[in-house]
Length: 156
Ligand SMILES: CC(C)(COP(=O)(O)OP(=O)(O)OC[C@H]1O[C@@H](n2cnc3c(N)ncnc32)[C@H](O)[C@@H]1OP(=O)(O)O)[C@@H](O)C(=O)NCCC(=O)NCCS
Image 1 (tube, helix red, strand yellow):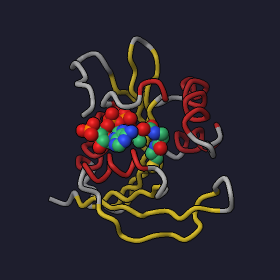
Image 2 (cartoon, rainbow, N blue to C red):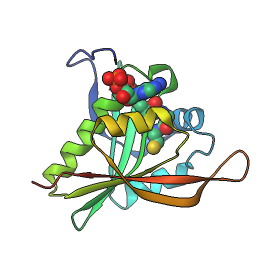
Image 3 (cartoon, protein in one colour):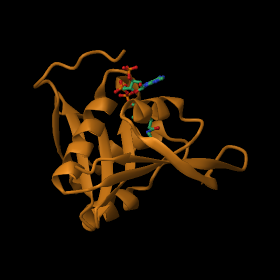
Image 4 (tube, rainbow, N blue to C red):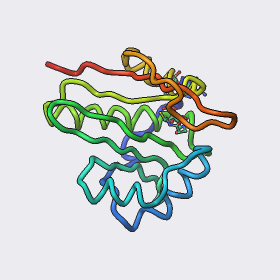
């Protein structure tokens, strides 16, 4: 069970260009195959929903989601390594779901590596369902890894 986060201790706000160095530090620690800074720049530039969680003026988590035509794609959700397991992933995922609901999204899609057990557990806890798999989708240490496609129906 995640630690309970005290209300008001953490704040959520949009990501801006000045946050990207701190975000890249978290990204490169969290993933073997991290996004580049340019990808984050592009996500901000094209107007994707980009949010971060701050604690004592430090970025501790962030998420990126695209939304169009009733569909949302959760493209990234990441918690600083030393802050994982404290409920921040859940906090930010709930926020992204709420944003999508307010924008009249019907379904949120995402892809996850089968090896990413903690992320899969988080998404299952939030009622995401498996739609299928993309073969050899991700680069991996040896060869490639499939992607599990998950979807959450949030239609009213
Ligand atoms: C996946 C990730 C976002 C989860 O965030 P987190 O803050 O560590 O997770 P939380 O503390 O909010 O936990 C929420 C739920 O996630 C699941 N979970 C989190 N860590 C887990 C672990 N180590 N093992 C199993 N389940 C886990 C549990 O269901 C948990 O609920 P519970 O505590 O009631 O059992 C985080 O570990 C992370 O950033 N990982 C690296 C980046 C990544 O892989 N992102 C996902 C890409 S698809």
